[in-house]
Length: 235
Ligand code: HPA
View 1 (cartoon, rainbow, N blue to C red):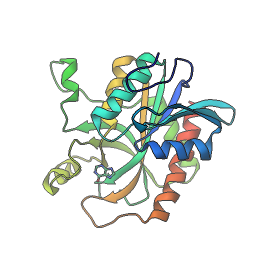
View 2: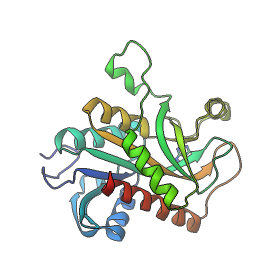
View 3: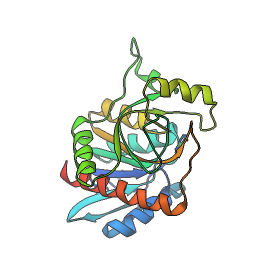
View 4: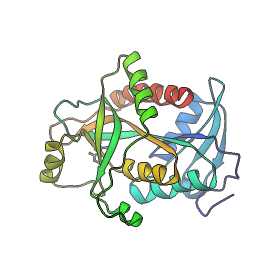
């Protein structure tokens, strides 16, 4: 069923979808890693493709940046396209001292400064968590690949240009890294009875100096992709 944001018909999208923030990244992932990719969406330039990886049908679609954007696309995938699993692949800013550039962060949970969860009218504060089987499998694959990886809390912020004191406060609570989407993805998955995980590479360090060159970005991207693809087809 096409939506205002997605022209795909039901059946054109796989049960598992990888979601990078950047739609052009989705195109590159489809063309690099999938066999016979077919584009199912171009609405608003939010490119989506379905193909096969090692014989398994898999889709990849951009999420856009920020909670409202990923919330729209992931909600529609879960509710209107029968998608069971979404794995966000993206970048994050390192917050914790043990997190370095190029490391992989597997988001076990995602704190936020957004009030997205208010919609559920809960009598307290909900903890948005990833699907445990996906977390466990991604960590196993990362371990097998010998990746430098961390499993723990993310911050999904609404404020990219935030002040240092706010970032430091989250770091003091052991939050590993900051990005802008995981919490909404996890909440949508949980509310729909479905599965989600975010696997990120560290592209910059928020409380220390450090930013990746284009080449370093590419290398750590490839490792993140190996983890995400293997997790997607084996879990
Ligand atoms: N802040 C928020 N989102 C991000 C960052 C960051 O430093 N790096 C990559 N995504």
